[in-house]
Length: 367
Image (cartoon, rainbow, N blue to C red; front, top):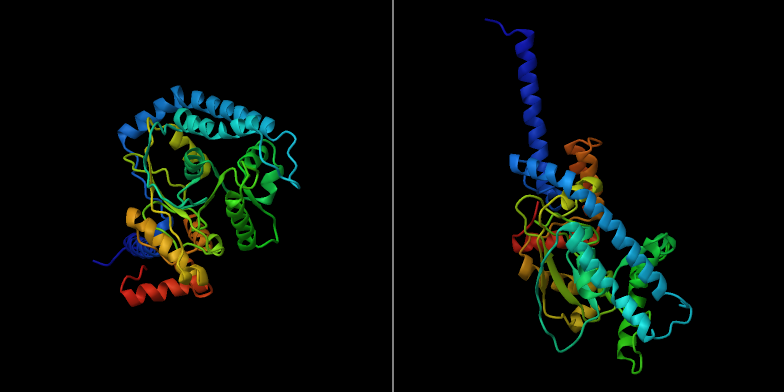
């Protein structure tokens, strides 16, 4: 009996589905650190999220606004009379106000995001480090490291003058990168100044050294199941750093923010009964002479130190690869086009080429 047109269409659709599945598998294998890895919805999660959205989410949103206003007010008062051109050590009352920001952020994590307890494993070192480097999985990282390490972060120059956020960022001593300026040069200047300030006798805590500097050298967020190579900017000064590994154990929702809309991520985060977070301090890494001469080696050794805790594969990808993957997810590129773009991006990036060659030589090449 001859095939009908309907039979032919069904066969064509099946073959097309097989082709799409093939390309999806290929794409997700290559872009693995950016693939959303979170448990699927189930009956329990649907019921729980519905109830939390109705009864708990409104309260948590109100608390977010309240904490934001209080933190802004504290930051505003603490910055009164500050002269950025001529920084001087903070007075006792200003130090008290600025120190109170971190507990406020910790309280916000507890009340608004359900991070009731942060399991922290500390490592005491004889030599202090004023630069914290960590793997990066999302905005919750920033809040946790700010709360636990009194950290200031890298931010766009435009953030500095933004309402509310700009004032808080300045109180956190964030490093503002102006468009057109080299991030590496800006980081080097700030890090060197911070260490010099700490070593200088008589400085009781000024706008340069009052807070630690927290950097995410990967340059983008990943899913907590894979990493990407660390960039060298923070390692160029050749000064000690404190590696801190962060991870989010989960059963229902992965707190990593890589390929999910921000509004959806905030909603799911704030409708969990509880979110878990772990911090593990690694020993302060003091660079060798080889590290000082070669920042890429410095970055690799620090990432290896973090991976002694995290034990994650490092994929030769960068921030632009994530954009390529997002285009695929949004249907703006086919799987074949996304993979071709990924190949081109890798070939143009010396660091990624070097990582790929090293992995191939060691027989540990990620796709």
